[in-house]
Length: 221
Ligand code: CA
Image (cartoon, rainbow, N blue to C red; front, side, top):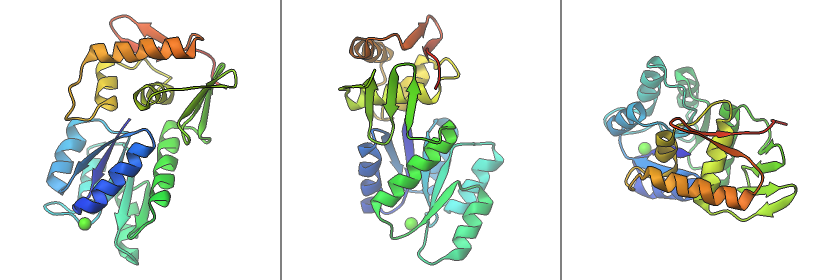
């Protein structure tokens, strides 16, 4: 899953990106409101971390525009310290949560996980599908209680499918969400990752719907 980071201070943006990647997610950063507006309208993200004070278009205006356009992506707003008006404006504009600057990275990541969970409709950080348990907080997968060792890419793929298990996920969408925008996006690579996951997980979980994409099979608990 890709997370868009909209922050004009490169050092903070890089720190957030590192934190996001430590959760097994893909981070993409942009430094101004205009570029963020463009990306938000053309790419799909699991969540957006949005600074309020931005060049070109400020964060609150941007968020209002996105919500007016019907963008439902969860947004975590970063506000200036002690600025209650920014918090109120952020929530009015459609923020899912806010965090005053300066913040502890642990808190940002906890809030990010929480909005992703709410968006996915899961109250717990562990998603159980049949005999497979996916721990989204600790990025671990176990089958019948036995941990399975996965690469970050494999984890991202299974995590994305699990969060979208009510539908068939097209290969192109997986490509978009698993790889950084700057990387080559090769649909064959997705097939290879799915094949490796199947070998590791052993029990039937990921179904291929020829010509459509992938789907997670099995009862939800
Ligand atoms: Ca700023």
